[in-house]
Amino acid sequence: QVQLVESGGGLVQPGGSLRLSCAVSGLVLSAHDMSWYRQAPGKERELVAAISSGGNNITYADSVKGRFTISRDNAKNTVRLQMNSLKSEDTAVYYCNGKHNHYSILEYWGRGTQVTVSS
Image (cartoon, rainbow, N blue to C red; front, side):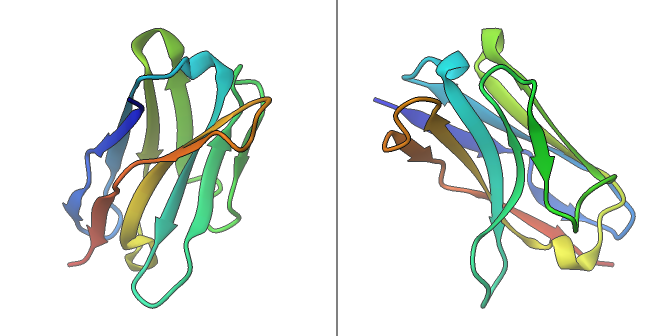
């Protein structure tokens, strides 16, 4: 059974930092491209950051470039999102996503973790 479990969300003041983690089980992490998405109330889910299965290709949404860093540790079955200089507009539920690097139909989602940026 494949499981993606996010953690690390919470309430933080503007300008603060959080580190999200995604613990992956039930699949070979090194065979999957991994991403973080977020969805704010009343808005569509959007891609925040993505990292290829080998870790050599990384992309970020323009809105988080220079503030967020995605990383992966295939040996520890973990994907992380370091979020710095947080803004109120970063408030959303953050989801971990995994997609097989050859068979894209094999796609998995976590249940999400809430990030709230507020003073």
